Length: 300
Ligand SMILES: [Fe+2]
Image 1 (cartoon, rainbow, N blue to C red):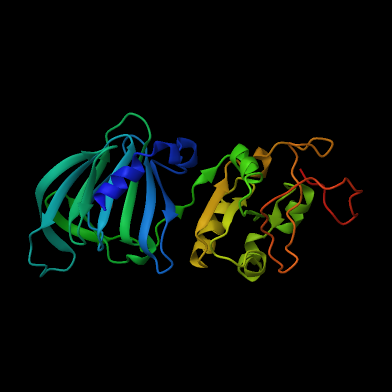
Image 2 (tube, rainbow, N blue to C red):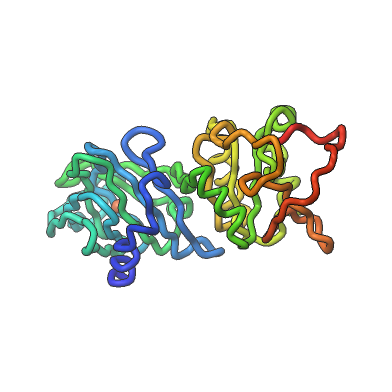
């Protein structure tokens, strides 16, 4: 597993920095993949200088490798007899600065600290035996020798990678299946939206998404008003089993204003399949221009 993760993390072309910014504070954890049963969960962890974590375990196996930047790890084993709830003792067993080309691996009861030691943002791949939302018993100690410990929340703030508007534009032409879902509420959507954007209001997400995107493997790009709604939608879609989700950076305002006529650079509406009500599309060519139905809002 270490060898495989080192090889993947070394593919820096797969992990452009703009896809994995620190969205809040000194770090963000991006979900890259996980099995339908929530096992074999892969994350990209972005960290700013100063990011650190106290001694903690994982309650499942874990492997970490670097994409860019340095993250210093100190390893510990727990040496107390676990007779006193909320307290324990640790002993240091080693240390390693994890970077591109190396990796660390942990068993469920191993402990480590992390500390970003680079002077710019870092990115590391973290592979766990079970997704973080399903690890309710992880603990962290107050100090490097142990002491009191507390339990991590079972539902950490996991986010989805970003894609740029230019990349979304390329997706619309790459021949692959794509669901471009606008999670703003319908009133706002009607005022301005991307031509291929399909409304899936956050407030009605669970009611509508099955009909719009029946297959869980569909590539999905979420669009919002750059207000965090798309990340909320992403978490809910993951819970429903969707696995290929990204969020367009900057929200709908980041999308270029339309040309005055249908051109090679313009986008055409996502078409519903004749055999289903889904909205994913694989190929689009600009149809003949027609006057817009009165009910269709002005696309952008
Ligand atoms: Fe960890």
